[in-house]
Length: 300
Image (cartoon, one colour):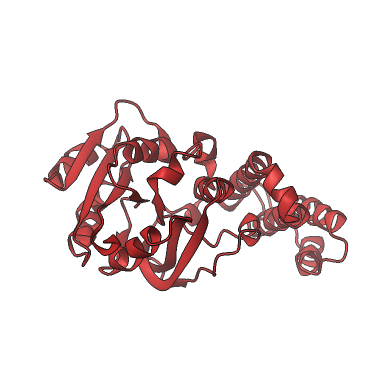
C-alpha cells in the first residue's frame, strides 16, 4: 500500500552541520515511519560539519562525505542516485518537516502513476514568520510562477527522465528548472494545501544577500531558465510574460539596491516587451525621482 511505502530524504549540507540534529529530528517525528535519509556533506569547510554529520548517522541515516564541493545541485544528485525508493525528496539541512508531511504526501504521489511531484505550503521560522502558499497545479502557469517550492516530493523514475538538478543553476532557480524538467517529461503534480515544510530564515538565506548581487544572480538564472526551456515557454504562450517579469524583477531589485539608473533601463525594457502592462509604471516613477545611493567613501 502507498501509505506504507518507503521514502528517501536527501539532505545536502554545506557548513550547516549545526542544524542537522534538528533536521533529522523532524524525520524521527514523522508519523510515516518507512523513511531513510542520506546526508551529503558537500566538502564542508567550517571545521565542524563533517563531525556533526557523523553524529546523526544511524541505521536509518546514511552519511556521505564528498571529497570536492559539488554545489547544492550536485550534492542532491549524489543523494538521489543512492535512493532505493520510488518516493524521494530533498530537504535542506537547515529546514525541517512537520510530523504529518510524509504521511500526507507519499500516498498522493504513489496513488497516481502520472503524478511526478507532490508539493505543500511553506511555514517560515527563525528570523521570519509566516506562510508561503502554493497553488493548484497548472502546467502553463509553472513557466512564470514558481509555486512548487523546493523540498517537494518526487518520483525517482521521473528524476531519471530529466537532467537532474543542473549545476548551472547553482546561482539560483535549480528547483524551478528541475520541476519544469519533470513536467516536460510528461508528469503532472499534486498540491497538498497544508504548511508541512518548515523553512528556516536566517542570516545565510538567499534573501539576506546584498540586493544588487541578488539582482545579477536573479537575471542570470532566469535567462538560463528561459534558454533551457524555450520550447516549453513558446508552447505555453508565456514567453513574453516571463521576459517582462524578468525585467520588472530586475528593476525592483535595483531600486532596492540604490541603482535607479539600472532600474529605469530594466523597467523601460519591460514596457517595450509589454506596452500595456501596468506593473512597471509605479516602479518606473520611483526610478525617475530617486537618486543613486552613495558608495563607500563618496563625498556628500
